[in-house]
Image 1: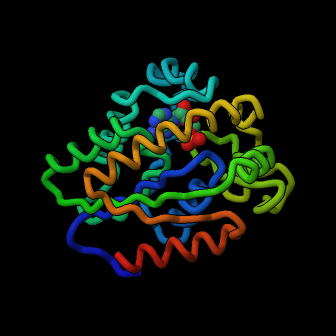
Image 2: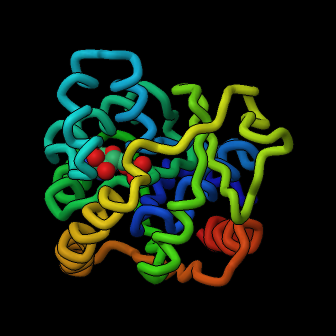
Length: 229
Ligand code: AMP
């Protein structure tokens, strides 16, 4: 991989639930040592730990609704300041998700003393494939791990046990069909607003169609994007 030494490179993974963002991010973390923040994982961790944030977030997660923009953006900015260095390559999995989040976050980056380049990787896939994938998804129940598996794709070596930490695998509470449909209903609206904002702000967007590709192929394609930066 070409190591970029002149500032942070931030990739925002954007796409519908179930498009494989988390799986690629996980591979990047394990195989390329890239820093990853999944905002969904962060929210679930707060809920599992019963923090003050977690108590506020729980109702939104259960209903498949988005967390208020100011709250989620502040959580991401705090993480970035604490966990990354000036030359880190970073993946934000699932953030920004609305035009307002993108606007607040890009203005934060501009004010930040370290230069950062920002590009969006836009995952696309059909609704039928999403419902099929999410109905087959299992995740590690350990809040610090949350590795993703699939009954129809990447299975764990031992049935219902995480390969990384050995904890039991579970279904996510929001992977029920009615909640999946609610999440999908919201998606086109915020997608269009976000893409319109990015266009106006001249942000680089890499189209990333993932239907019919295996997790390994998706990972390979993302590595080529990193190497072209
Ligand atoms: P995910 O794991 O990406 O499917 O996210 C799970 C849930 O976390 C979402 O349904 C939202 O409730 C919340 N969430 C994650 N990222 C964001 C974000 N950028 N903006 C608002 N809510 C978010």
